[in-house]
Length: 334
Ligand code: UT7
Image (cartoon, rainbow, N blue to C red; front, top):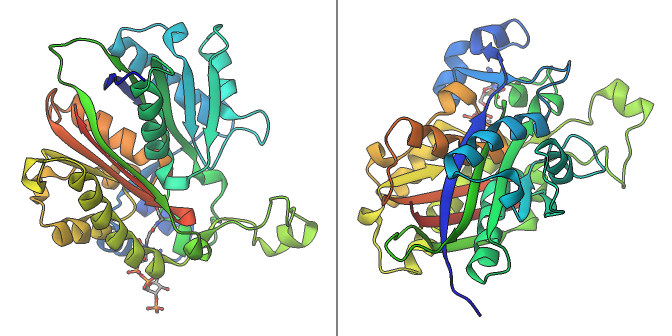
């Protein structure tokens, strides 16, 4: 079996034009800019247009075009689209096939949606890594794209303030250049279904389709036990970092950048303290975008590259967790 190096060839992101600030939220629910910023680190989030043009696959289209350009590849060079989202355009067909058509891909490449909540991008990335490593595919388009504004109850201050819409993508492919050291160094994926009630949306699926009563009670939205999630999140994220490092000769000091899931600034800071990582090495953009679920890691990664923080050759760690509870981490030499 082949053992190809795996390289991130290009990245991209898209956020909707409409910005919703904490001050705007003060007019919608009983909250304050001060409370939200102190408890979460969030200042504003972007919200998709409901008129069209910013559906999850549209955002993915714009982001993917930029990522393909950066990778110097054509849409038909993609062999697999892995689309991480809990807010797909439709129940059927999957968003990956919709994106395939929007990109004008005519090679019949495989197209799969991944429902792993906030870990969706890392799940896709690690799965694609295995397929590229073994020669099964050459280039994959990994997407995290979410329109969470559709699934939150805008009357519930416990949840509606936390989320935003957006998309991040990465084009990942075979690295055949002997002199290019870019590679994926370690991966980890896991889940613990016993925590499924900490963050769920049980109504609207096969078991309990939405009825008039649900519409009246408005109980068909996402619901979260914030404190429980918080505790599990910090432990899990810190544990993931150790798991991927253990697979290599590297130590925490060798990691140049940690790109964690952006759920709450306090989760990120607590995780950083548990690990003992230099806070300057942690990428944070939660103030601008809030929690965009599967999109946070690729958006934060892309922005950090654009800002000149993350450079080729740097050791970068992705670290995510989310509803399920799903989790995953990746260690790369970018
Ligand atoms: O991506 C994965 C999913 N996301 C997460 O895992 C997030 C994990 N959890 C968190 O980020 C935090 O737990 C929250 C930000 C959700 C909540 O922060 P907290 O410090 O755990 O607050 P709390 O839930 O303990 O609530 C404290 C108080 C409560 O009032 P009482 O009971 O102390 O009187 C809440 O009712 O804050 C109140 N509260 C609010 N006040 C103003 C809750 N939401 C708001 C709000 N504005 N939006």
